[in-house]
Length: 469
Image 1 (cartoon, rainbow, N blue to C red):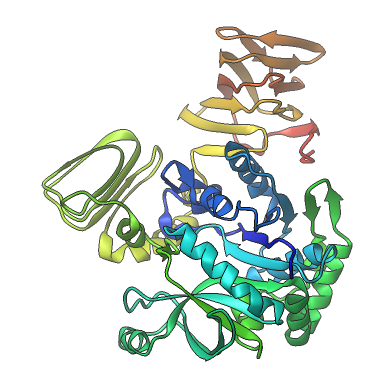
Image 2: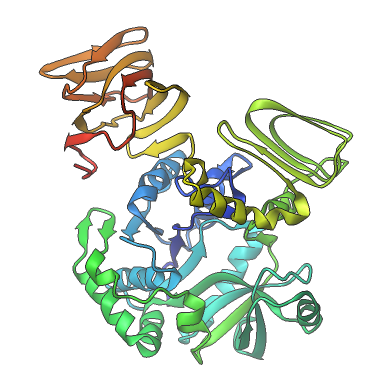
């Protein structure tokens, strides 16, 4: 097996356990930045060496454009497979294997979560290369993390006979244990299940067809009936819905006799809670981690982050304090794993803060609501170079645009004009209009909306280069 390893990056999770930083509209793989890069970007950079081929990003239409923007920031090219609905990891992985296997069924596929942190990239790459002989022999290789503590938040793997280059056959997978069992598992040398895998496309497809024949047929149809464009495969929605919603562990790994494990010690974390993020972050002499405009006084073992307002914390221990522009979280660090309950409660009461940031990403750029009232709303809008909003109109509001940076091309009715900083445009209620950035630098403007209804669904799209019309 001499072909480069093809990374498959799973990028569909919502990451609600790190709310309010991570939300459905902008999950943790994009939102969490360590050392200047998001953990999605770090995942891509980790597999950017000569032994790796062009990565495939498995995601949905909403996240595709965020991913493309972050890929551009690090100058990485990738292909996309778009899921029409969430079906858990098994259908996503098998769909990607189906597409990748058309060119070479024996291509080794490295299946990685996009929202994990790894501190020792060299150890990770060495483990990947050591697993290749097992992959060539038809094994499905999972990467087992050497435990640093008896964690109860992960499944465990018991390794059996030695195969090759340090890979071992899997004797059994174990569900997340209680504290006592976890201590015993660590003493007995069991490994954490990282949820990252490697196998050839051929082996993955054979095992999935063996253990999930109906779902296998559905995914084959979803790939055959997909809409394709350069670098993008959009799976057929009707066919894909026929695949059972299962994790790759349950669908294949816990059933196959071809499971192998490569032990790995690389500073891995799934960053599954604020407490875990605190534990893997650089701390000061008092055990504190601070991000943004933060002042700490007589505080110990706290994680404090602010994306705007100056946040002062005094005389406390073991707290998580997260300050966003539209939501604030304060919780005991040792109970931060319960944050998901807050999100569920917000959803039940219809609070948009549960899933939507005040900064909202679109294919053309992003906008952020900065002020609002009963009949007005103010937005900061940034349009990426060559970005183009849809040709549209509104039934309930008029808009006023003031350009503050760059050169914007504005269409109102039959009139097309270029606006530079400190120039403005008025869009009357019902007028057909469009905003675009013809240049090579971002365009920024302030939008004031006035009307009796200001919801995002008051848009009639007439033309759209992103196929949203």
